[in-house]
Amino acid sequence: MRTKAVAGIASIAALAAGLAAAAQRAKASPLTDRFTRSARVWKLSARNSTRFAVSRLKGIGSAEQRRAELDEQFAIRTAEDVAKELGEMKGVLMKAGQLVSFIFEALPDEAQEALATLQADAAPMAPSLAAGVVRADFGTPPERLFLDWGDLPVAAASIGQVHRAITPDGRDVAVKVQYPGVHEAIETDLDAAEVMYSMFSTMMLKGLDAKGLVDELRDRMREELDYAIEAGNLAEFEARFQGHPWVRIPKLVPELCSAHVLTTEWVDGMTFDEFRRSEPDATKQHAAEVIWRFAQNAIMRHGIFNGDPHPGNYKFHHDGSVTFLDYGLVKRWSPGEWETLKPSMDAIIIDRDPDRLVAEMVAARFLPLDHGLDPALVYSYVSSPYVPYLTDEFTFTRDWMRDTIGTIFDVQGPHAEVIERLNMPPSFVILDRVVWGVSAILGKLQAHGPWRAMLMEYIADGEPATELGAAEAAWAATHEAR
Image 1: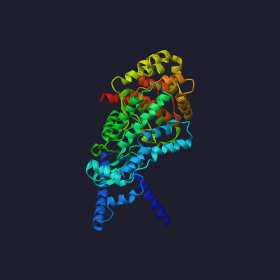
Image 2: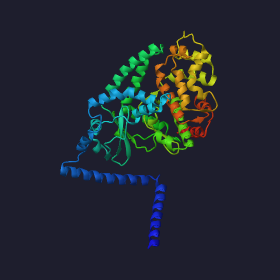
Image 3: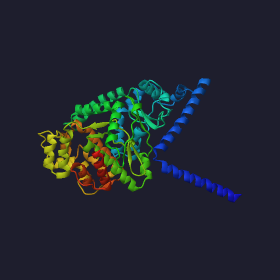
Image 4: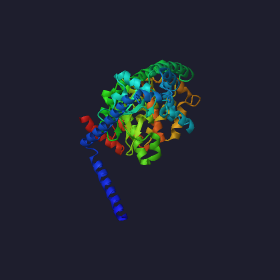
C-alpha cells in the first residue's frame, strides 16, 4: 500500500510538473491569454451575479453598505477631511518631503524612513469617497464599471490613490483615483511656496527668480492634476520606449481614463526596499543603469522626461529591468530650452573649461553679466554634481551624495559668493530635480560604471560604453527605422 501511495504521489507530482511545463510553454500564447482571461471573466461574472442576487433578496451586503462600514476606518471620509489632510501632508509640501527623504543623506536613517512614509503610507481616502470620484467621472459606480473592484487601496500618495481592479474583459488593472479637493490644497501650498521662495532668495540666492520658479512648479502641478494629460504622457512614453530591452512602461487602458481616474495594466514587481534587500549586486547594478539611461534617453533624445524620479514610482524585476509607473509630473522642452542649457553642460563635461562655462552661464541667465566671480570658483561649485562624469570610472555612494548636497547648500562656505549670485532659470527646475533624484537612487544602489563614456553616448554621439548601451543602440536603430 505504501509503495502504491508513493507511486501515486509521484504520478501526481509528475502530472503537476508536466502541466506546469506546458503552462510555461504556453505562457506567451495569445490563445492561452484569451482563455485565461475568459475564465476569469466567467468566474467573476458568476460571483458578482450571485452577490447581487443575494443582496437583492436580503437587502444587505450592497457595495454602498460595505463601503459605509469600511469608511470609519479611514482618515479621509469627506471633502473637509481631504482639504485638511492634503493641506497638512500632501500636495506640493508632501512632494518636497518625498524628495528630501531620499536625497538628503545627511539626515539620520530614522528621519529618512519617517519622511519616506509620505510616499508609502499616506492616509488613504474612504472607499465611498473613491467610488464617488469614479461615479462622477463615468456616471456609474466602480462595481459596475469594472468586473471586480478592490475597495481598499493598494497605494496612496500625493494627489491620488491606487485600487486594483479587473476590467469587463478580464484584464488585471491599476486604477489611480484622484483625491477630491486636491486642486485647492495644491494651490494653497503653491501660495505658501511663493512666500517661502521669496524668503529663500532674500536670505541666500538673491538672484533667484522666485516668482518664475513657482510659476513653473504651478504649471507642472496643474498638469499633474489632470489625469487626461497624464494619460497622454503615458501613451507617448509607451510609444517612444516600445520594445525597449529593459525599460518597461505599463499599458494604458484609455477607455477607463478620465480627468480624475487613470487606468493602466497591473504590474507585479518589487519595491525599491525589497529589491535592495533581496537581489544580488549584479542585478542592482543593472537596474541602476536602466534608471540612469531611461532619464538620459528621455531628456536628451526625446525632449520629454519624468520629473518625479522617486523609487516609489518604480517596480523592480528579477532580471534587472524596471517598470516606470508615474507620468503626472512630466516636463517637455520648449523650443530652444535644451539648446540653451547644453552649452553649459558641454563646458563642464566635455571641455572642462571654467571660462567657457561662465560665458555660457551668463548667456543662459544662470549668472548676471556683472557677476564679478572667479571662473575657477564657479566651475568648482557648478561641477560638483557632475563629478561622476569627469572621471573614467566612478561609484555613486550615499556619502558622496551627502557631501555634494552639503557643498551645494553651504552658504557660509568657500562658494558663498557663487551661491549668492547664482540663479536657476525656471525652465530648468524640473531637470535639477531629476539630476538629484537619479543620483540619490544610484547612491543607494552603490552604482559603479564608466559614467563619463556613458554620458558621451547621449551628448556627443559616443560609442556604447556598456552592454546595456549596445543593446539600447541596437533597439534605437530598429525603433527609429519603423
